[in-house]
Length: 132
Image 1 (cartoon, rainbow, N blue to C red):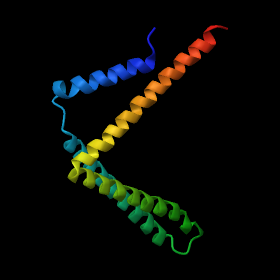
Image 2 (cartoon, rainbow, N blue to C red; image 1 turned 180 degrees about the horizontal axis):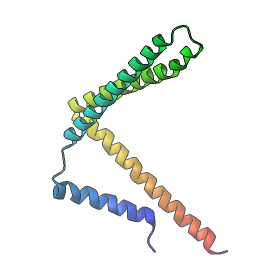
Image 3 (spheres, one colour; image 1 turned 120 degrees about the vertical axis):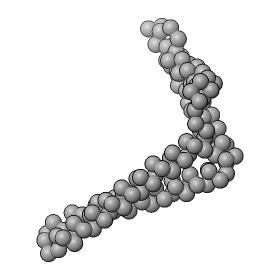
């Protein structure tokens, strides 16, 4: 029986080699552009969330439950800052394609190394456990 990690690695290599040509896949810049759209949608949602929490905070003026809106406002502001950083990274990668390809190459390399280490660990466990 073949090792699942090796099968996954072979499938990943085959998919990377064949699928873009067969499917007429989008270019890397188009995919990054889709991330740009998704981040814009989430930015809008977090601004709406903050505004709604602020409105409810002012509506509840003089009540004891007024402070319940603070976690929602803090969460919305946190989401805004994270999305702004992601948006800046996407804009950077759109203008510096070689840097984006380098980062993607490093990520793919680390994933492959992780799969190989997991496969070697499973092989070692089978050898140690098989004798008992």
